[in-house]
Amino acid sequence: MRYLALIALAAAAGLLTGCSGASTSGKKAEAPAAPAFFEVNAATAAGVTGKVVFTGKKPTRKPINMGSEEPACLRLHKGKPVQEDVVLGDGGALANVFVYVQAGLEGKQFAPPAEKVKIDQAGCTFQPRVFGIRAGQPLEVTNSDPVSHNIHPMPKNNREWNQQQAPGAGALERDFTRAEVMIPVKCNIHTWMKSWIGVLDHPYYAVSGPDGSFSIKNLPPGEFTLEAWHEVYGSQQRKVTLAPSASGAVEFSF
Image (cartoon, rainbow, N blue to C red; front, side, top):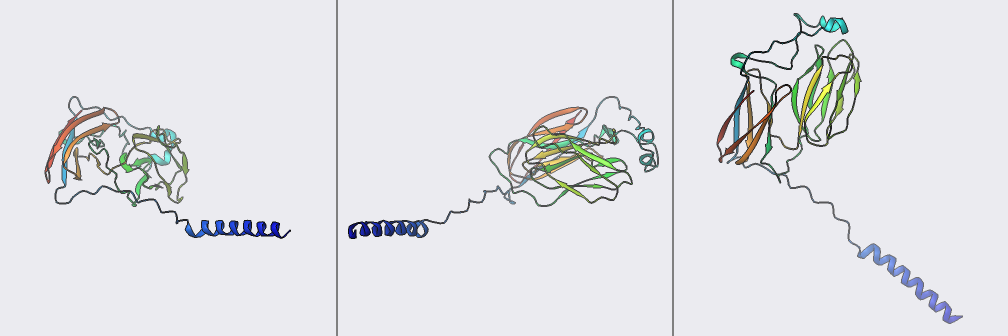
């Protein structure tokens, strides 16, 4: 009996030692290392500017018959509203063209921005018509109109969502987790309302203004492929090589 008791005591001591050893000798799990975000050297940062133009016969902008679907929308406009798919300025300047770095940044990871990108439903149109956002960056959706709207992005590489927003309702906040150029957006209530979102994993993009101009700043030196996308005329690419502290110029013609 004494022999058995000694064995039992030894076994218990072994268990205690094992448990104690597990708690004291085991190291604390280390937190995962923070990602190494790429930062551009301000002393050598480059940039690219350019213009997007339309050549050929100027297309006629088609009127939007808002009154037949929503008379309240028509009352928000002084004149007759027209389609915004092709917006031309002086000298054939083409607005609402999404220009971004399509290649040349491989292997670089950029810190995600915290600020929100905003889209408003105003005058029964989406404002802005075309815009860019970073993957994971918050998108704030507001409705400034006295009528209900419905925002419905239709991505292929992200989660689709569909949200109605009544007049005076609070802002919605959503995001897109993966890069995708371009995501079409519609309003299920008002068929003429459309927008386009370019989601990127880097900050190098711009949208051409009413004069057709665009600017992409703070690029690292190197060789890049720029792509210009338009909702009607498709996309084009141009290569540009940027020396340290240099500024390049690119023109797109549709």
